Image 1 (cartoon, rainbow, N blue to C red):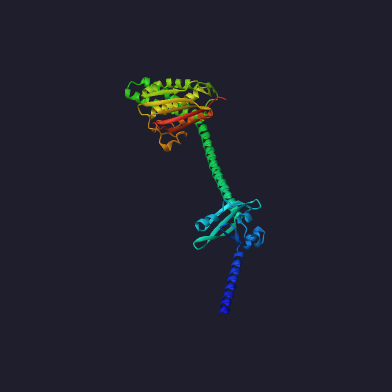
Image 2: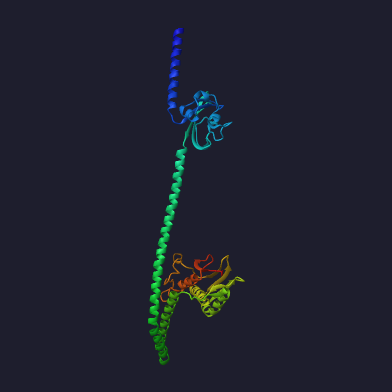
Length: 392
Protein backbone atom coordinates (compact mmCIF):
# COMPACT_ATOMS: atom_id res chain seq x y z
CA UNK A 1 0.00 0.00 0.00
CA UNK A 2 2.81 2.38 0.89
CA UNK A 3 4.72 1.50 -2.27
CA UNK A 4 1.68 2.28 -4.45
CA UNK A 5 1.21 5.62 -2.69
CA UNK A 6 4.86 6.54 -3.23
CA UNK A 7 4.56 5.53 -6.88
CA UNK A 8 1.45 7.70 -7.32
CA UNK A 9 3.14 10.65 -5.66
CA UNK A 10 6.13 10.22 -7.92
CA UNK A 11 3.89 10.16 -10.96
CA UNK A 12 2.14 13.37 -9.83
CA UNK A 13 5.49 15.00 -9.20
CA UNK A 14 6.75 14.07 -12.65
CA UNK A 15 3.55 15.38 -14.25
CA UNK A 16 3.81 18.64 -12.30
CA UNK A 17 7.40 19.01 -13.41
CA UNK A 18 6.41 18.27 -16.97
CA UNK A 19 3.56 20.82 -16.77
CA UNK A 20 5.90 23.42 -15.28
CA UNK A 21 8.46 22.80 -18.01
CA UNK A 22 5.74 23.01 -20.65
CA UNK A 23 4.42 26.32 -19.29
CA UNK A 24 7.98 27.59 -18.98
CA UNK A 25 8.61 26.67 -22.61
CA UNK A 26 5.40 28.38 -23.73
CA UNK A 27 6.10 31.60 -21.79
CA UNK A 28 9.72 31.65 -22.95
CA UNK A 29 8.55 31.56 -26.57
CA UNK A 30 6.54 34.77 -26.07
CA UNK A 31 8.34 37.88 -27.30
CA UNK A 32 6.62 40.10 -24.71
CA UNK A 33 8.23 40.43 -21.30
CA UNK A 34 6.28 38.35 -18.77
CA UNK A 35 6.82 38.07 -15.03
CA UNK A 36 4.83 37.24 -11.91
CA UNK A 37 5.12 39.27 -8.69
CA UNK A 38 3.69 38.83 -5.19
CA UNK A 39 2.08 41.55 -3.09
CA UNK A 40 5.52 42.86 -2.08
CA UNK A 41 6.46 43.21 -5.77
CA UNK A 42 8.99 40.39 -5.47
CA UNK A 43 9.62 38.51 -8.70
CA UNK A 44 8.67 34.87 -8.50
CA UNK A 45 8.81 34.21 -12.24
CA UNK A 46 10.36 35.85 -15.37
CA UNK A 47 10.31 34.60 -18.94
CA UNK A 48 13.24 34.53 -21.37
CA UNK A 49 12.29 37.82 -23.11
CA UNK A 50 12.41 39.66 -19.80
CA UNK A 51 15.74 38.07 -18.89
CA UNK A 52 17.22 39.15 -22.21
CA UNK A 53 15.98 42.68 -21.60
CA UNK A 54 17.57 42.75 -18.13
CA UNK A 55 20.73 40.98 -19.25
CA UNK A 56 20.68 38.80 -16.14
CA UNK A 57 20.07 35.11 -15.44
CA UNK A 58 16.82 33.98 -13.89
CA UNK A 59 18.47 33.09 -10.56
CA UNK A 60 19.76 36.66 -10.20
CA UNK A 61 16.35 38.32 -10.28
CA UNK A 62 13.99 35.80 -8.65
CA UNK A 63 13.04 37.16 -5.23
CA UNK A 64 14.14 40.70 -6.14
CA UNK A 65 11.78 43.67 -6.34
CA UNK A 66 10.60 44.26 -9.88
CA UNK A 67 10.84 48.07 -9.69
CA UNK A 68 14.50 47.84 -8.71
CA UNK A 69 15.53 45.16 -11.18
CA UNK A 70 13.65 46.50 -14.20
CA UNK A 71 13.62 50.26 -13.69
CA UNK A 72 16.31 51.02 -11.13
CA UNK A 73 13.85 52.62 -8.70
CA UNK A 74 13.88 52.46 -4.90
CA UNK A 75 10.12 52.04 -4.66
CA UNK A 76 7.06 51.05 -6.71
CA UNK A 77 6.82 52.97 -9.97
CA UNK A 78 4.25 55.77 -10.03
CA UNK A 79 2.60 54.78 -13.34
CA UNK A 80 2.46 51.07 -12.38
CA UNK A 81 -0.97 49.45 -12.74
CA UNK A 82 -0.11 46.31 -10.75
CA UNK A 83 -1.35 47.83 -7.44
CA UNK A 84 -4.72 48.43 -9.13
CA UNK A 85 -4.95 44.77 -10.08
CA UNK A 86 -4.17 43.75 -6.48
CA UNK A 87 -6.90 46.07 -5.16
CA UNK A 88 -9.61 45.38 -7.75
CA UNK A 89 -8.86 41.76 -8.67
CA UNK A 90 -9.42 42.78 -12.30
CA UNK A 91 -7.12 42.81 -15.32
CA UNK A 92 -5.69 46.21 -16.23
CA UNK A 93 -4.22 47.77 -19.38
CA UNK A 94 -2.28 50.96 -19.99
CA UNK A 95 0.20 52.51 -22.41
CA UNK A 96 2.79 54.75 -20.80
CA UNK A 97 5.95 56.58 -21.77
CA UNK A 98 8.66 55.88 -19.20
CA UNK A 99 12.39 56.30 -18.78
CA UNK A 100 14.22 53.04 -19.34
CA UNK A 101 17.32 51.95 -17.42
CA UNK A 102 19.40 53.46 -20.22
CA UNK A 103 17.69 56.84 -19.73
CA UNK A 104 15.86 56.70 -23.06
CA UNK A 105 12.11 57.22 -23.41
CA UNK A 106 10.17 54.05 -24.00
CA UNK A 107 6.48 53.49 -24.68
CA UNK A 108 5.46 50.39 -22.73
CA UNK A 109 2.09 48.74 -23.16
CA UNK A 110 1.23 46.94 -19.88
CA UNK A 111 -1.25 44.14 -19.22
CA UNK A 112 -1.81 42.78 -15.74
CA UNK A 113 -3.84 39.73 -14.67
CA UNK A 114 -4.66 38.59 -11.13
CA UNK A 115 -3.90 35.13 -9.70
CA UNK A 116 -6.50 34.54 -7.02
CA UNK A 117 -6.24 32.06 -4.15
CA UNK A 118 -8.99 31.71 -1.57
CA UNK A 119 -10.78 34.78 -2.86
CA UNK A 120 -7.74 37.03 -2.58
CA UNK A 121 -5.25 38.22 -5.19
CA UNK A 122 -1.99 36.55 -4.24
CA UNK A 123 0.05 37.19 -7.38
CA UNK A 124 -0.15 39.38 -10.48
CA UNK A 125 1.03 38.43 -13.92
CA UNK A 126 2.67 41.38 -15.64
CA UNK A 127 3.01 41.46 -19.42
CA UNK A 128 5.09 44.28 -20.86
CA UNK A 129 5.29 45.08 -24.55
CA UNK A 130 7.71 47.66 -25.95
CA UNK A 131 5.71 49.58 -28.55
CA UNK A 132 8.12 52.52 -28.83
CA UNK A 133 8.80 51.95 -32.53
CA UNK A 134 5.12 51.44 -33.30
CA UNK A 135 4.03 54.55 -31.37
CA UNK A 136 6.82 56.60 -32.95
CA UNK A 137 5.70 55.45 -36.38
CA UNK A 138 2.08 56.28 -35.52
CA UNK A 139 3.18 59.70 -34.28
CA UNK A 140 5.14 60.33 -37.46
CA UNK A 141 2.16 59.18 -39.52
CA UNK A 142 -0.13 61.61 -37.64
CA UNK A 143 2.35 64.45 -38.10
CA UNK A 144 2.69 63.61 -41.79
CA UNK A 145 -1.10 63.53 -42.10
CA UNK A 146 -1.32 66.95 -40.44
CA UNK A 147 1.39 68.30 -42.72
CA UNK A 148 -0.36 66.84 -45.75
CA UNK A 149 -3.67 68.38 -44.67
CA UNK A 150 -1.88 71.71 -44.20
CA UNK A 151 -0.33 71.49 -47.67
CA UNK A 152 -3.68 70.57 -49.21
CA UNK A 153 -5.28 73.56 -47.47
CA UNK A 154 -2.51 75.83 -48.74
CA UNK A 155 -2.91 74.46 -52.26
CA UNK A 156 -6.65 75.04 -52.13
CA UNK A 157 -6.11 78.60 -50.88
CA UNK A 158 -3.50 79.19 -53.58
CA UNK A 159 -5.91 77.84 -56.20
CA UNK A 160 -8.70 80.14 -54.95
CA UNK A 161 -6.30 83.10 -54.96
CA UNK A 162 -5.20 82.18 -58.49
CA UNK A 163 -8.81 82.04 -59.60
CA UNK A 164 -9.49 85.39 -57.92
CA UNK A 165 -6.46 87.00 -59.61
CA UNK A 166 -7.57 85.56 -62.94
CA UNK A 167 -11.07 86.98 -62.46
CA UNK A 168 -9.60 90.33 -61.43
CA UNK A 169 -7.39 90.38 -64.54
CA UNK A 170 -10.35 89.57 -66.76
CA UNK A 171 -12.35 92.27 -64.97
CA UNK A 172 -9.50 94.79 -65.37
CA UNK A 173 -9.23 93.99 -69.08
CA UNK A 174 -12.98 94.39 -69.43
CA UNK A 175 -12.88 97.72 -67.60
CA UNK A 176 -10.00 98.92 -69.76
CA UNK A 177 -11.98 97.97 -72.84
CA UNK A 178 -15.06 99.72 -71.46
CA UNK A 179 -12.96 102.83 -70.76
CA UNK A 180 -11.61 102.94 -74.29
CA UNK A 181 -15.03 102.30 -75.79
CA UNK A 182 -16.63 104.92 -73.54
CA UNK A 183 -14.05 107.57 -74.42
CA UNK A 184 -14.60 106.92 -78.11
CA UNK A 185 -18.39 106.98 -77.67
CA UNK A 186 -18.23 110.24 -75.74
CA UNK A 187 -16.39 112.01 -78.56
CA UNK A 188 -18.73 110.56 -81.17
CA UNK A 189 -21.98 111.28 -79.29
CA UNK A 190 -21.21 114.62 -77.69
CA UNK A 191 -21.65 116.70 -80.85
CA UNK A 192 -25.01 115.23 -82.04
CA UNK A 193 -26.41 115.29 -78.49
CA UNK A 194 -25.41 118.92 -78.04
CA UNK A 195 -27.01 119.72 -81.41
CA UNK A 196 -30.25 117.95 -80.42
CA UNK A 197 -30.29 119.76 -77.09
CA UNK A 198 -29.80 123.13 -78.79
CA UNK A 199 -32.59 122.55 -81.29
CA UNK A 200 -34.88 121.43 -78.45
CA UNK A 201 -34.36 124.78 -76.73
CA UNK A 202 -35.09 126.61 -79.98
CA UNK A 203 -38.24 124.56 -80.63
CA UNK A 204 -39.40 125.04 -77.06
CA UNK A 205 -39.24 128.81 -77.55
CA UNK A 206 -40.87 128.72 -80.99
CA UNK A 207 -43.81 126.41 -80.25
CA UNK A 208 -47.01 127.87 -78.88
CA UNK A 209 -48.91 124.63 -78.27
CA UNK A 210 -48.33 123.36 -74.74
CA UNK A 211 -48.67 119.71 -75.78
CA UNK A 212 -45.96 120.06 -78.40
CA UNK A 213 -43.73 121.98 -75.99
CA UNK A 214 -44.13 119.16 -73.42
CA UNK A 215 -43.03 116.62 -76.02
CA UNK A 216 -39.97 118.69 -76.90
CA UNK A 217 -39.20 119.08 -73.19
CA UNK A 218 -39.32 115.29 -72.80
CA UNK A 219 -36.83 114.94 -75.66
CA UNK A 220 -34.53 117.51 -74.00
CA UNK A 221 -34.66 115.67 -70.66
CA UNK A 222 -33.77 112.36 -72.30
CA UNK A 223 -30.85 114.02 -74.08
CA UNK A 224 -29.58 115.32 -70.75
CA UNK A 225 -29.90 111.85 -69.31
CA UNK A 226 -27.81 110.42 -72.16
CA UNK A 227 -25.17 113.07 -71.54
CA UNK A 228 -25.11 112.23 -67.81
CA UNK A 229 -24.63 108.52 -68.53
CA UNK A 230 -21.68 109.37 -70.76
CA UNK A 231 -20.15 111.69 -68.13
CA UNK A 232 -20.51 109.02 -65.42
CA UNK A 233 -18.89 106.41 -67.66
CA UNK A 234 -16.04 108.79 -68.46
CA UNK A 235 -15.53 109.59 -64.78
CA UNK A 236 -15.29 105.89 -64.00
CA UNK A 237 -12.94 105.20 -66.90
CA UNK A 238 -10.61 108.11 -66.08
CA UNK A 239 -10.58 107.48 -62.34
CA UNK A 240 -9.88 110.16 -59.75
CA UNK A 241 -7.82 113.21 -60.57
CA UNK A 242 -4.15 113.22 -59.61
CA UNK A 243 -4.24 116.40 -57.53
CA UNK A 244 -4.60 115.38 -53.87
CA UNK A 245 -4.13 117.97 -51.16
CA UNK A 246 -4.59 118.10 -47.35
CA UNK A 247 -8.35 118.19 -46.83
CA UNK A 248 -10.56 118.74 -43.78
CA UNK A 249 -12.96 115.82 -44.14
CA UNK A 250 -15.53 117.27 -41.72
CA UNK A 251 -15.64 120.57 -43.62
CA UNK A 252 -16.04 118.67 -46.88
CA UNK A 253 -18.98 116.69 -45.48
CA UNK A 254 -20.66 119.85 -44.16
CA UNK A 255 -20.19 121.56 -47.52
CA UNK A 256 -21.69 118.59 -49.36
CA UNK A 257 -24.69 118.47 -47.02
CA UNK A 258 -25.25 122.19 -47.64
CA UNK A 259 -25.05 121.70 -51.41
CA UNK A 260 -27.54 118.82 -51.11
CA UNK A 261 -29.97 120.86 -49.01
CA UNK A 262 -32.46 121.37 -51.84
CA UNK A 263 -32.42 117.69 -52.80
CA UNK A 264 -32.81 116.46 -49.21
CA UNK A 265 -35.67 118.90 -48.54
CA UNK A 266 -37.42 117.79 -51.72
CA UNK A 267 -37.07 114.17 -50.56
CA UNK A 268 -38.28 115.13 -47.04
CA UNK A 269 -35.09 113.68 -45.57
CA UNK A 270 -33.33 115.01 -42.46
CA UNK A 271 -29.53 114.80 -42.34
CA UNK A 272 -28.01 114.31 -38.86
CA UNK A 273 -24.24 114.64 -38.42
CA UNK A 274 -21.99 113.44 -35.61
CA UNK A 275 -18.52 114.59 -36.62
CA UNK A 276 -15.52 113.95 -34.37
CA UNK A 277 -13.47 116.96 -33.26
CA UNK A 278 -9.86 117.69 -34.23
CA UNK A 279 -9.58 115.19 -37.06
CA UNK A 280 -6.27 115.42 -38.93
CA UNK A 281 -6.39 116.40 -42.63
CA UNK A 282 -6.45 113.75 -45.33
CA UNK A 283 -4.57 113.83 -48.63
CA UNK A 284 -7.46 113.91 -51.11
CA UNK A 285 -8.86 115.54 -54.21
CA UNK A 286 -11.73 117.59 -52.77
CA UNK A 287 -13.93 117.49 -55.86
CA UNK A 288 -13.64 113.74 -56.31
CA UNK A 289 -14.25 112.95 -52.64
CA UNK A 290 -17.21 115.33 -52.64
CA UNK A 291 -18.57 113.32 -55.56
CA UNK A 292 -18.42 110.22 -53.32
CA UNK A 293 -20.46 111.91 -50.58
CA UNK A 294 -22.85 113.36 -53.14
CA UNK A 295 -23.53 109.93 -54.68
CA UNK A 296 -24.06 108.29 -51.29
CA UNK A 297 -26.40 111.03 -50.07
CA UNK A 298 -28.41 110.99 -53.30
CA UNK A 299 -28.73 107.18 -53.18
CA UNK A 300 -29.86 107.36 -49.54
CA UNK A 301 -32.53 109.94 -50.39
CA UNK A 302 -33.84 107.76 -53.22
CA UNK A 303 -33.81 104.64 -51.00
CA UNK A 304 -36.22 106.11 -48.44
CA UNK A 305 -39.14 106.76 -50.79
CA UNK A 306 -40.37 110.09 -49.50
CA UNK A 307 -39.16 110.54 -45.91
CA UNK A 308 -36.55 109.46 -43.41
CA UNK A 309 -33.22 110.36 -41.85
CA UNK A 310 -29.58 110.10 -42.87
CA UNK A 311 -26.91 109.80 -40.16
CA UNK A 312 -23.34 110.77 -40.98
CA UNK A 313 -20.52 110.25 -38.47
CA UNK A 314 -16.73 110.52 -38.50
CA UNK A 315 -14.31 108.83 -36.13
CA UNK A 316 -10.57 108.50 -35.90
CA UNK A 317 -9.02 105.02 -35.60
CA UNK A 318 -5.38 104.15 -35.08
CA UNK A 319 -4.41 104.48 -38.74
CA UNK A 320 -7.43 105.98 -40.50
CA UNK A 321 -10.52 108.13 -40.41
CA UNK A 322 -13.79 106.21 -40.60
CA UNK A 323 -16.86 107.83 -42.19
CA UNK A 324 -20.23 106.12 -41.74
CA UNK A 325 -23.40 107.07 -43.62
CA UNK A 326 -26.63 105.31 -42.63
CA UNK A 327 -30.19 105.80 -43.88
CA UNK A 328 -33.51 104.60 -42.51
CA UNK A 329 -34.71 102.97 -45.71
CA UNK A 330 -35.44 99.32 -46.41
CA UNK A 331 -31.79 98.32 -46.69
CA UNK A 332 -30.10 96.27 -49.41
CA UNK A 333 -31.13 92.70 -50.26
CA UNK A 334 -28.53 90.43 -48.68
CA UNK A 335 -27.75 88.61 -51.92
CA UNK A 336 -26.92 91.95 -53.61
CA UNK A 337 -24.51 93.32 -51.01
CA UNK A 338 -21.51 91.86 -52.84
CA UNK A 339 -22.63 93.25 -56.22
CA UNK A 340 -23.62 96.86 -55.61
CA UNK A 341 -20.10 98.21 -56.26
CA UNK A 342 -19.82 96.47 -59.64
CA UNK A 343 -19.98 98.73 -62.71
CA UNK A 344 -23.41 98.94 -64.39
CA UNK A 345 -25.08 97.01 -61.57
CA UNK A 346 -28.06 98.87 -60.13
CA UNK A 347 -30.97 98.07 -57.84
CA UNK A 348 -33.00 100.96 -59.20
CA UNK A 349 -35.85 100.62 -61.65
CA UNK A 350 -35.00 100.68 -65.38
CA UNK A 351 -34.31 104.22 -66.57
CA UNK A 352 -33.52 105.55 -63.06
CA UNK A 353 -29.86 104.65 -62.68
CA UNK A 354 -26.72 103.97 -64.69
CA UNK A 355 -25.16 101.52 -62.23
CA UNK A 356 -21.93 103.54 -62.13
CA UNK A 357 -22.42 105.73 -59.04
CA UNK A 358 -21.14 103.27 -56.41
CA UNK A 359 -18.50 101.89 -58.80
CA UNK A 360 -17.15 105.43 -59.14
CA UNK A 361 -17.23 105.86 -55.35
CA UNK A 362 -15.18 102.69 -54.86
CA UNK A 363 -12.71 103.71 -57.57
CA UNK A 364 -12.15 107.12 -55.95
CA UNK A 365 -11.80 105.73 -52.40
CA UNK A 366 -9.35 103.05 -53.54
CA UNK A 367 -7.26 105.66 -55.35
CA UNK A 368 -6.44 107.21 -51.98
CA UNK A 369 -5.64 103.89 -50.29
CA UNK A 370 -9.02 103.54 -48.62
CA UNK A 371 -11.90 101.11 -48.77
CA UNK A 372 -15.68 101.37 -48.87
CA UNK A 373 -18.05 98.66 -47.63
CA UNK A 374 -21.80 98.30 -47.25
CA UNK A 375 -24.03 96.41 -44.89
CA UNK A 376 -27.55 96.45 -43.53
CA UNK A 377 -27.45 98.35 -40.24
CA UNK A 378 -28.82 96.65 -37.10
CA UNK A 379 -31.09 99.66 -36.45
CA UNK A 380 -32.57 100.00 -39.94
CA UNK A 381 -31.59 100.82 -43.48
CA UNK A 382 -28.29 100.56 -45.30
CA UNK A 383 -24.95 101.70 -43.90
CA UNK A 384 -21.90 102.61 -45.97
CA UNK A 385 -18.52 102.72 -44.26
CA UNK A 386 -15.50 104.52 -45.73
CA UNK A 387 -12.03 104.19 -44.25
CA UNK A 388 -9.33 106.59 -45.45
CA UNK A 389 -5.69 106.30 -44.30
CA UNK A 390 -4.12 109.12 -42.31
CA UNK A 391 -1.28 111.16 -43.75
CA UNK A 392 2.18 109.70 -43.05
